[in-house]
Length: 153
Length: 344
View 1 (tube, helix red, strand yellow):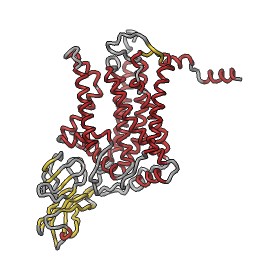
View 2 (cartoon, each protein chain N blue to C red):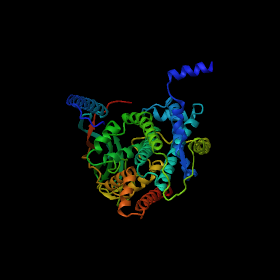
View 3 (tube, rainbow over the protein chains, first blue to last red):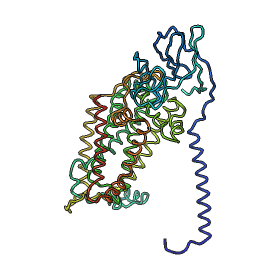
View 4 (tube, rainbow over the protein chains, first blue to last red):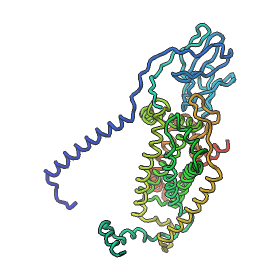
């Protein structure tokens, strides 16, 4: 910096170069970032069989693993309640415990949920997500969203 | 002949040897004559070992869900000295974290981060965070049960960051769940992105250390100095050798095991991260998620901008050393969480 004023021509040339290269690099960078974010696969609601009701003891619970995700099933006599078996805290799969106040337990951070899927204790921020379920002909059916999966492995 | 060769080389590489030697001629204040001050070079030496053993491991490791676990098992059990190379890689990674923490403690205690050396500290903290990043991504590559679930939990944490969390998680995992993209990304981070950032940050850190020279200790009236080369370098080398010996002995005596293969359907009953994430793991069990996210963010930002925070506190209450008290309390609290998680 020698204190001389910048000639107008040089200033304008620098400005045009600076703006053009910023826009160009910015646009390229945005595309690089977009490349890293894969498009969300299409999803559709599908009914899945979650197995026979008789496989779950009355008043008991079980986890089933379906292509659409992990499901926590709880038998209520001839009926069934279903939740997402993914802990709302940090995504671990919950486990069934024969505990009257907190039937569902997350081994990761000790979150506990009651039979209605509500948080009893621990860090989970909200209840387990309910999943529509019904029993037909002794078989449990759940309706869930299925993401199309690409076989990348 | 030697003269001709030297001349030929000097013409093709026109660098003055005198200029090259100049940075070595620095005089260091005598308070650095203590072993805690000789740990700056240890993380660098360990990083070199990580690079060498890491490159060797890439010759056999396969970053796909179907093959990752099997390739680690093969490295550990079938290949000649595979167990040793994996063990050195894992142990040096852990030691690197210890060495960086000790180095940070030394700089914190001596308040060597004060103006004009703030940027040296900032790059130092960046190096610490990068080291933790290496630990997290490296652990996820093993793809046994604990490793898989640590990746699931660790990445899910990001989803709770307000506004940008879900999108960042999507990019981090390359999809909604931990999937083949995730392993490829973590492998890429571990062997490409993080090492590049590490080399750049180490370079910036060292440049700033050399530009500013070593800070004098507050209240230390001694003016004596000693030579950076060979005195200080030899001391650093001696510490590095002891660490190297401990590393090799430990790596040979306790090679890392391998758990059950990852099962995305079953979270193991005793899931736990590596020891350096114990404090945040324990903290997340104790407090609501948003509290955990914000306090962790505040902790990291506080650490990163510590020189300015400390200077602000000093202006608020001159001579009371509020910053030192606050920093020590935060460190002790972190230590308590670590020990608590370790013993329960």
